[in-house]
Image (cartoon, rainbow, N blue to C red; front, side, top):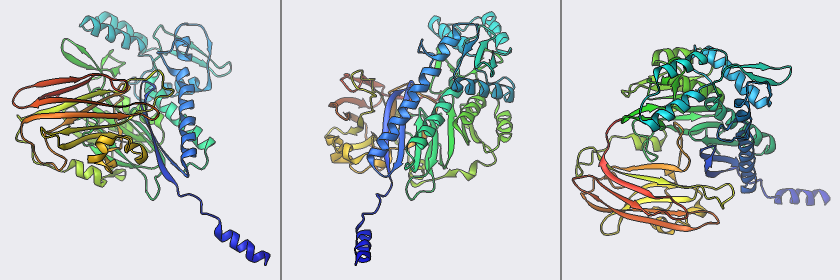
Length: 497
């Protein structure tokens, strides 16, 4: 009888909960946005993983942020005397030494003075003086620091301030993922997307890997079709390019990525995407490939075990490393987005509507999460004709977007991970090509752009405004509120950069 009771008890024990993907979205993390996708048995575990990742990111921000006067790197930049450094700082400096050698000087961790010189040039609307750039370049060719492992100290050897962003962000992503794995062993998979730098660990339930899009540098709106699709498991991917951040001098754009050998902004490929076994390697290579020619970049990638790349030249030509095809996929959503559709012939050639949205940092909100947001277009009769974006794919919160839910419920496929050049925090650009959700060209006329936001434990607010889409440029501004800054809507011809 006791054995029977034991058997009954065993049969009535509820099964362990099936793993599920929990999604978290935050802005204003390390000066950009953070998307975190956690495979966990329950929401409590997933939220714990999010908190662990955020705590590790914040810990390392205090090491590497050049914007924080109290950070470790800021203290190091203020002196030429030996300074005791953390193991994290030492690891990143050693990585810079390795990549500076491998790149033949095309990658360098002392570009702080170049950043200053070109920022000053932008303010004055003239390029930095050739003599000043020559002085900086001469310093960059020298060893920048001496690392003493015996005393855990670093001594800067030139006056050039350190700027370690090109590797530090990748290092931070890796450490955040390591912390989650250590503190939350039941987490079965993780996808971290920090400003376009992505780390994939494990896979989603019933999946063979994480699907990640590659942003098209020639069409980098947040709702644009990706250039390619990748499927990753236990790999990192990073994208660099001068198309997202740049200096404008005399009406001309200059990349924010510098060639340390010349002191000038890189004038190479439009973008470079690199897959590697870790984010540090992916970041270092992606930055370097934007400085080198595609031919030299492919040779460098071929010398790094496990690395693959996609380089897009300024004219749009794509250069693939030999093994990239092993990671390339065309998931249904990518294939649908990339299929050829008839051009919208009812609008003037090349014209589109662009919507520039900014989600500001809400000081009163601790660790501010990106609000659940929907952006869509209505015709002159008030009928919704095109959904441009929906951010936040937890059904229990999407329903709180009551206006959009009526016309777009269930369309969570608009939310995806995309590797891209890093953008500013909370800034999103959307485009509308004049077609409805089925790809049918709509007539010229007056349309309404609607923006609806609802933050957890926050406000439920709306913006809306009309834009005339006819035969000439037009613009409109939507007033800011507690959840969105001023939104700019423009109907104009989009010219290739």
